[in-house]
Length: 238
Image 1: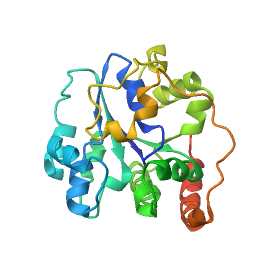
Image 2: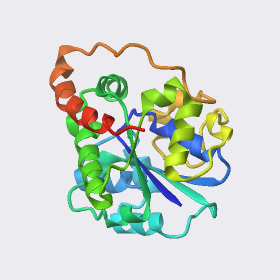
Image 3: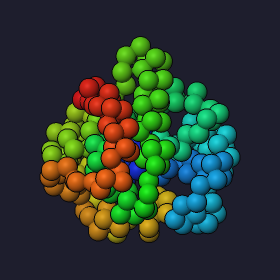
Image 4: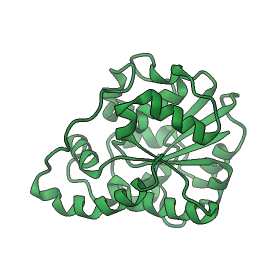
């Protein structure tokens, strides 16, 4: 089974990749379209040279790798995807060969976390528009909403949330998903030293999240644009 997990950045996405990798029966891949996105968008991101040197910049090659044999030779293949990496014109038909899951997080938390790593995020940077578009496309294909899971529910009760997710995917849950070794994962992307500090220091999911962060007035419009998109998907969370 191929599992495509779709989220924006700063959305518990790396911890979820570590969780699935910790199962023992699941190979993972970390943001495989990142180099293609950087090449086509002209964006400049931290550790850009390292990213371009370690990934294919050809979306067609990335797709071929994603839908081909599991490179880890395991029953499950977990693919961590950033929604904003999927630029207009990129082929999405391969998604039909995956179980697609949408990982959501309140935009106030996403914006606050992102801004600590890269100042001045835009709506395109945080992926809510692209996530909503992919969600609606997958809903149309399936004839019903795909799986949606909220990072706050995972943080509040990891075992219960992950068991529910595994049931929705049709795969067994294991408590191995709750813990992983400290210090990173061999399948981390080249950008991990900049972005993954907290999860590299962790051995499991952090405690439940507290109150929503207070954002500066500079981010009021960004929050206002992202919040309705988040709320649309949140209506369908498991």
